[in-house]
Image (cartoon, rainbow, N blue to C red; front, side, top):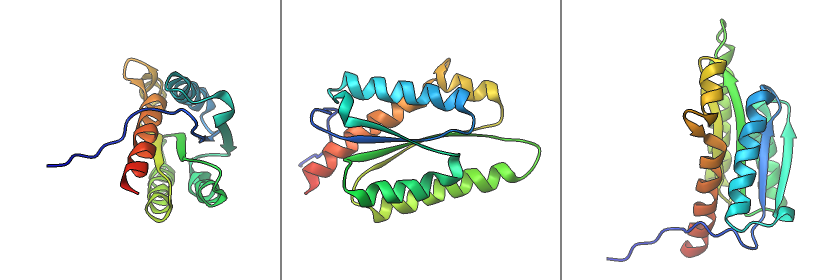
Length: 154
């Protein structure tokens, strides 16, 4: 039986950290975690670009452009949608996930999903570097592994 999986080597790779500015108290922590993870796995500073969009709704549009540019080995989408008193949360969170999924399936490079969808600010903070780890780090690890897996599958 043959097994194929990606490793976490980032040497010589280029990543786009695509981040929504909305809820930047949270998203900046995700960016810091993802960038630190990439650096720790051999990605040079010039191999990391941070691309900012207004919020989670705009992530899929920008991800499609980044994939089409051919400049990156992977896109790491980072955002935060916190439930409010209206159905707005459901539309934004659902369309961000659906849109990024569509870009990932149609694109030629991995798209890592690091978009938090929480009920409260406290839950978001927990997932951005306190009690529940940092989901930006987790998304970066996924991107590293998938980039190397894609290479193995070619």
